[in-house]
Each structure stands twice: as structure tokens, then as C-alpha cells.
Amino acid sequence: MGNSKENEAIGVKKRGTIKQTDEEWKKQLEPEAYYVLRHKGTERPFVNNKYYAHKEKGKYYCAGCGNLLFTSDKKFDSGTGWPSYYDVYSDESITTKTDKSLGMERTEVLCARCEGHLGHVFDDGPKPTGKRYCINSAAMDFKRDEQKEKDKGE
Image (cartoon, rainbow, N blue to C red; front, side, top):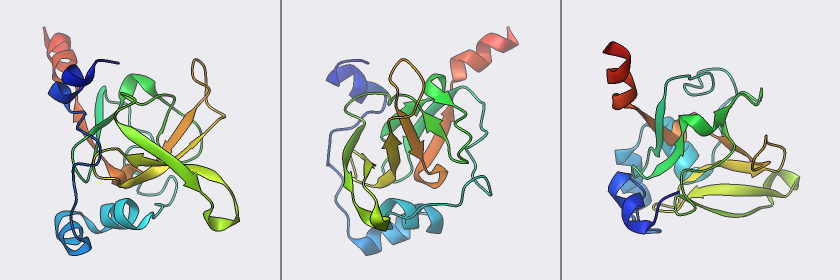
């Protein structure tokens, strides 16, 4: 993980810098992204989940504000029906807080820049972190690693 200047240069934004009204978010986001990011929704597993079985090399960004969250090299198949990662791009990418909804205690994962709900993190992931960041596809956008694709063609 890079330092703050390096992080900002490649897409990690400053914490909590995006503040918009609910109406502004509703106009900006696709309906499912709005539901997940702004109302702590959860998309259905497996079905219409665009990044669950996604294998391209690249980076995953917050669909609300473009903050860099995860990279494909930290993604793994957890069998849960949602994209899962064993680490975040940077400690500056996300924040967490205790979620006591649905009669259980979990750790909610939020975008550090716009405070949008991304999903939850669990302590049952693979080494080296032991973490499983279980993230809603609707909360993310993906950008393919262009250099890796160019190298393939040469």
C-alpha cells in the first residue's frame, strides 16, 4: 500500500470528502447502486451479480464517488455469491463500523470518501489476512488493467 500522495494519484481519495443530499445521490446513481450505497441494501447473491465470478485483472472503485477500493489480485471465490477480497487496496480506501441490524453483530464496510455502504467484512477469509470483504457488486465499478492487456497483445 502506498503513501497518501501515491494513493491519491491512483484513485484513493480523502476520507469523507463527498457530501450530497439524498436527492442528489438518487439522480447520480443507478437504482441498485443507490439502494446499496445510500440505504445499506444488499443485492441478491449469484443472480445478476456482475462481479461475483468476474475474472478480469484490474481495479474496483466505489460506484458513488470513484474511490479506489480493491484490486483483482486480492479477489477470491468465497462461494457466497458476492465478490470477496482478502484485503483492501489501502487502509485509506474504507472505514468500518459495527452493524447490529438483522439481529446479529457484523462489521460494515463503508467507502472512506463518500461513506457509502459497500458490504461487510468477516474473519473467515484466506491467508495472509484471514479477512473476507464481502462486497455488493452494485456498489462498485471496475476498470481493467490496461498495461496487462497491452502486454498480452505484444
